[in-house]
Length: 152
Image (cartoon, rainbow, N blue to C red; front, side):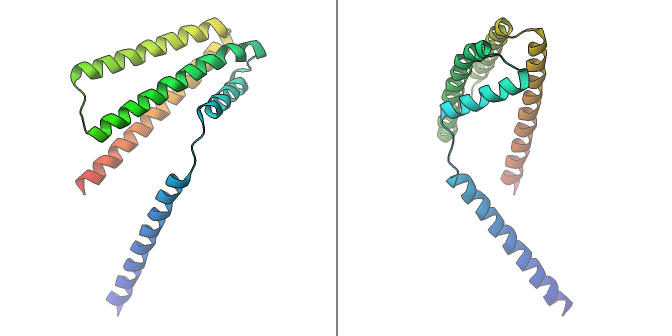
């Protein structure tokens, strides 16, 4: 009798877990993505709140954010295409990608230094570091999650 109850409890818990996963994937598929302009506006407003930007600073930063968004969208599509083609990166390609990324970061920092004052720059660098750490954690979690799926 105990075995029967235990078996039934186990089966029902597993079926609920499967249903929850189905609902989660459905949410991801049906959620609409924001347009580039919407993302730019939200990012600019968040920066305005965090850094206390003036109207003139907002006007100067808006095209920089738009430029970054287009670069990230193109990178994302390239990475997606490479992933679908299952084409691994060579050492030289990895170096080029990392080098371009660092060049873009240097360029962004120099542009922001021209626009922001010293206090705003400190806040921006601190928030940039936090975002970088969060992205690193998310990347690690994703890597661990995919490794777990492969080993199963």
